[in-house]
Structure formats: C-alpha cells, structure tokens
Length: 394
Image 1 (cartoon, rainbow, N blue to C red):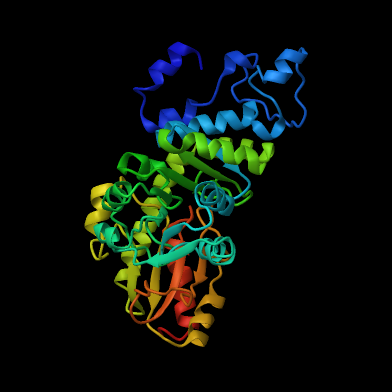
Image 2: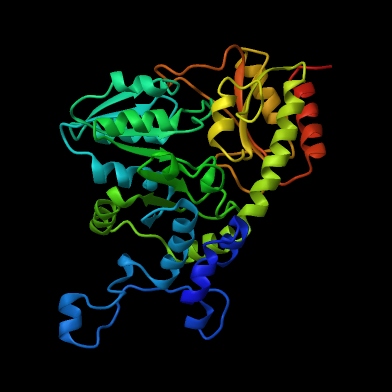
C-alpha cells in the first residue's frame, strides 16, 4: 500500500480491510499477492550495516515480507501495536506465557481453558516454580479477590472451551489492571471480527490461525498480538525463542484470510440454524451456544460480541457413553476429528474430567459440533439418522 491508500484504508469497512491490507503491489512489480519468501540468510551491503542491523530484514527467523504481510492484516483487525507468528495455536499460548511469567509468580487461568493450555501450565509452569490457580470462568469482577501481589497474568478464554461460558472480560481486565497484572485471551472462537479484545482492556490476544483465518483444515499456525504496554517484551521474547512460522503456511493463511469475513458469516448462519433445530429436538437435553437467548450469559455475549461463529455444544439425553458412542460412530457426513473452523463439519464427544470448578453442562453427554459450509438440511439429516442408530429415536 502506498501512504495514500493506507490513509484511505482507515475508513474502509472490515471486509475491504481483510481484502487489501498487507498487499503492496507497487513493491512487487504489480503482482497482487506478496511473494512467498523462503529465507534463512539475508545479505548485508557492508560491515557497518551488518554490525548495527541497519536494514529491515536481518535473518529468516526475524521476519520476511511474507510474515510482515500477514501481521499487518492481523494488526489491522486487532488494533494491536504488533503481532508475532508462531508455528501453532498452542505455541501462541505458550510463548506469551513464557514471556511474561517467571518463577515465584502467581497466575490465574480459567477452569474451562483449552485442554493443552492446562497441560502446559501444570507440566511446565508449575515445574518452573509458578503458582497456577484455576478460577470459575463466570467470576467476573469477583476475580479481584483471587489476585495477589505476585499475580502476573490472568488468562481468559471466551467462550470457554467446550462448555462455552462467556466471560465478563471488561470486569476482569479492570480488576487485573488495578493490581498491575497482564490479561491474555485465547480469542480463537470469536476472532477479532466478532470480539476486538484489546478494545475491552485485554493486553495480549491469542489466535490459532489454523481455524477461521486459514479456514481449510490444511495447516497449523498461531498469532500473538499485543498492545503498546506489552509489545516490546513480547517481540523480544519471540525473537529469543526462535519460534517462527513457516513461509508456506503463512502465505496460505494470508490467502485464507481474504475470504474470512464471507466464510465466517456463513458458518455463523449455519450454526445458528443447527443450534435452534437441536434445541427443539426431543433427544437433546441442552444446547450451549452464546447467541441463543437460552444461554446463561447471552446478555454478556450480546453486549460485547458482534457475532458468533460455527462452534457450539449440545448434550445428548443420556449418561450412557456406549449409547453416545453408537450415535457418534453412525455419523456419516459430519466427521469425527479434532480442530474446527474448517469448511467441513466435525463432532467430538467431550471429556470434562480435567475441570476442577467449571463442570456446568447439566445432565447428558456433551458433543462439540463444528458447523461447516455444508447445507444445514444435510447436516440435520445426518444427525437424525445417527440419533436413530444410537437408539435415541425410533
């Protein structure tokens, strides 16, 4: 982008920004897309430039035109001071925690966090001498009572993994900042299109770019975006760790992000249709979708979020895992597999045994459903025949 175009982009709508930010055709002989730069060594014109790092690119791990293009789009969406790319969504969680937590610190992590987040905290941070405390995701301003003088980080995720509790992020940020703690959020579910977390007080926003930005179930990548307060420390630590992103995965994500706005609206529409249908189904005990009025934190979701996405949960009317497994194994169109936010629908039977506080689904066995881009009529037909095969209906 030229300076003039960049200035104009400030008044563009979100889809236009997604389409054009990070593209600089004038710098690449008029080609619309930036080049995929495969790089380790970068040459310098002379000793002084090399000694003092007086050029934009210094080594492959410290950024390329390809990574810069993707980071530019993410910063535009997030309103962040800077973004780093890492090889996976999990690395996007572990890198900032390592950057801001040290031995002797106390951190607060929501109890309904992504499972590998808990594993990292319990297996790595605890071994480092960090006091990890899990809190009720619905605590809101009450988190002030858990904050200590050595609390360095409050880790949030809204909605919570699998059980979809919507956190009161502004209240948590206010309390945390009064004690000088940093607030991080795993914002993968909403993306910055539907929850611009830094505007609500969050310091560091984490994304599995594997999900909606890439959108095609063919790569793993993560990003970490920081406000001015935290950017310098995050950027320095990222460089020290040498945890950089693949150029090809970066380019594929940049390509995917151009259509993310269009895709995410279709995911949202299909998921709401499926959630409402399941809510009325006699074999379903409950539906966990923040955009439904029946969701316990629907009003918080409506206050803070601009939309919903394609992932939600529902509970089968049974406590018999064998019966639930028969339903699950009978699915034909809906895949059995991890991850989500790709173009195809997926389901997982969820195990909540690691939760200490946030059990919260009531009776029944929980199914996490990723609604893809298929016709909802076909998804309904698949669930209907699977419920019949599982013995839930005649």
